[in-house]
Image 1 (cartoon, rainbow, N blue to C red):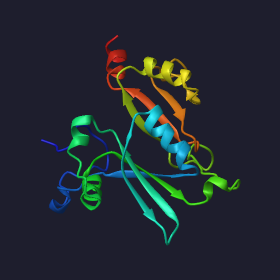
Image 2: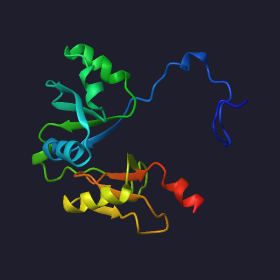
Image 3: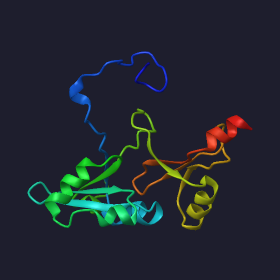
Length: 181
């Protein structure tokens, strides 16, 4: 029996035992203006700020965000050092990195990875109903890259954050629904 749930060339059937407790913790995006970015990720998408780390000597701040329900948030340590460990043990965390002063520098721009040369593409957020979520995004004035009814892939959307990064909006069961139709 394979350890993988699907097949593809290049899969390792027997990874080193030392990797058993590895966890994919976070992905980092650079941001220009923390007030705009934090508003987008906490108000528009509903994430919570889990931990903020300021590095005064190097003049930057890291904001770690994630989806945490009220019960789980209640278990987060009050002690900031313990909460740092708690944050780094989590899965699927978004780290926003702000270099101080970038919000006032007109020349600061970030490459989304979706223009040439292409590289990084997007992060994704699963919602219960992609169409309802997109109606809400419309009301909030969110910029769309692709609406769920547009393009060849129906039922998924892409929006832009304040720094131009793409956020895919997906409904977990939509591909299954489409395949069974």
